[in-house]
Length: 169
Image (tube, rainbow, N blue to C red; front, side):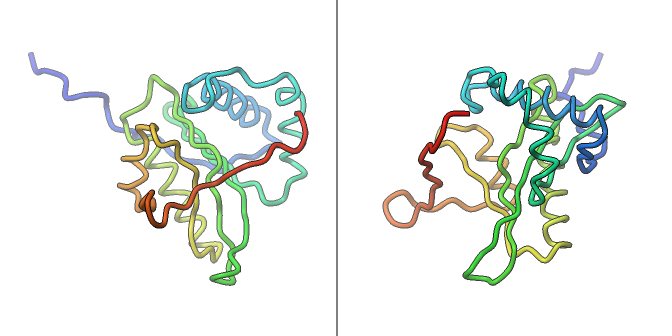
């Protein structure tokens, strides 16, 4: 009997989120909720207001770009991004705000497939680059590096996103 060499590689497809498709909307919420419970997503459930309003608000947010990874009819990953604009390149950019892979499907290339499709799409749209925020302790940093993302050096040029909460959700 042959020993298993790990989980089977992702053999599904990445599709663009259609927020008017009830299944896409439900799977976006499910995967985002799972990610929120993960330590890298904050370790807390999504607030009721998010469940109540996110999909409708995203429908009215023209800079949203969403991707779902699907394999054998099962939704196994999610990437949410938003257009922004770089004044230094005078071109649009996409910030990957959420990258979530179902815990049972990690290590199979789902995250890479999502990032590759986001990069392909961003290039097609004339974007100069992709950005994302990464916690210092996030094991996915290795994935981001393999996909071409570069972090700065903390003593000289580390760029990080800071935030100031303006209102309660």
